[in-house]
Length: 78
Image (tube, rainbow, N blue to C red):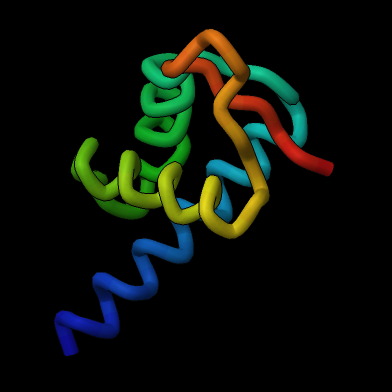
């Protein structure tokens, strides 16, 4: 049961990140994390570590990428 809840939360966090990045196009890591926390806190309190994992997953799946020369800035890939 808890595994299903954790998996669902992972997808919620990823979905929120993609929606934020679609609108903002480019965003620094701390601002992105803060935005995710503010949007998802209505449903649950996310761990920053889970948000960072979601960002890495979305980079691997090519939804977002790091801006070259700026390790902590991310860009949405259309």
